[in-house]
Image (tube, rainbow, N blue to C red; front, side):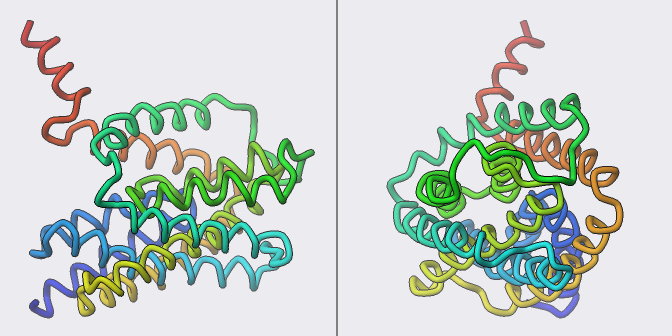
Length: 262
């Protein structure tokens, strides 16, 4: 792989890390870039996890240093997400990926509508709908499993779970989502690495860019809060939905083609 290609992958990682640290969905940028660099689909997915570990790890460190992550609260969900994602990666050959790809655009559109029209996002915490123990045993490993099997939007789903179910305030939810996402990225990465699917040079190029971008993104989220986070989540969710819906063979694309053709 040429130096110019590695440089472009690092640039994609930089942008991805910035977006992912705030709203999730950074894989929307790096996964196509890795595929275009010549990697086969499995290697692209596996190598993308290496870059994602750098990005989510960098964001986690930035939020922790800012005092926004309580390890005693988030360590158990992060470990549960790690275990769930490792199981998801192991189940990948048997998972209904096509069904997930078909349903996810509608889920992401619902996420965008929620954040576009929901009441103002608050910084302060609220009463939790799930106890920390129940959240750790159910929501965290379920999203982790999804991240290991498929992945797009997992960071956003962690954040929504912490906001809506665990009672976190906005910045605490973003920060908590980063350490949970780091756990699930690491869990699936370990499985892919053991299977020998990681392309080291492009993965490190993406990882370097993602590490720097995530530090910038975390700093921006800390400074701007909901003024930046809310519109970015809407834009990223819509972009992911459009990308998935426009994929060849996607039911929504075929339905729209038939509708306009008829």
